[in-house]
Image (tube, rainbow, N blue to C red; front, side, top):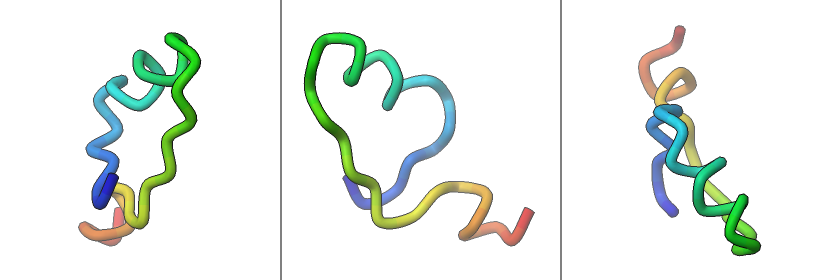
Length: 32
């Protein structure tokens, strides 16, 4: 995954047993 939008999608995918690696998160891109 390029950007984790931090909307719960990553957790939903990982709950199904798939490991997710994101290069960036929404908060780091928007400097929040």
